[in-house]
Image 1: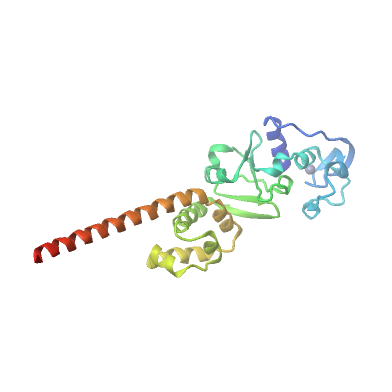
Image 2 (image 1 turned 60 degrees about the horizontal axis):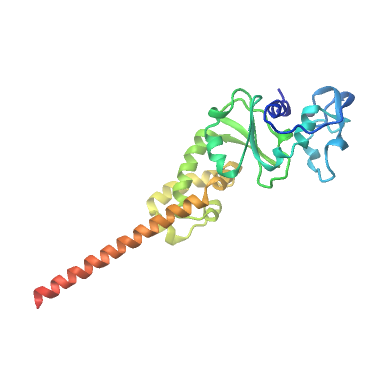
Length: 253
Ligand SMILES: [Zn+2]
């Protein structure tokens, strides 16, 4: 099945209203996916004047677009959500659920599947997705870019990034320019080990995605708790020091 055939099939059982298409007889290939068609819709009836993704069409010289591509392009839900689909099910989800879906794909899809992610909540992904069949390495379409995601590597990096994120900002992780004070707090030796791994992957799209996935609210809670504990520890030490001094004072009195 092609990417849009998979999504179309999943859409049918998703409960989402299927947009209507004016189909007519056609002879040739679908403009978007390039497959042979005997019926299709005129491109102008499917896309709006804002459409700019012509460069990703497989058969730009065609005259019609197939039913599946047409429906995918016209389905708004596929642009304003992240999605994963196999032929039986379509999952639409938000940023906070990326971690769950990307790292546990096996739980959700069977056989061939596609993944489209959005940060603009308006650009097309559906007809540009690559069809995947492996859970270990798969392509993610993210609007104008597409990249290979290696699950084992991503999990390892993500765990380390989480640990670093409790000390550094996302900006520091993305650029590799860290504040010296924070390196000291993190532990210089451990920092060296971590940063040697990070610098190998910095600049790749999937590294960027992993940083995007880090949940700032969760981070702030953990950091606030750490600061609170550090404060309490300091107070305890100050109190103990004061008592010690008083003891010494008494001895000399
Ligand atoms: Zn098509």
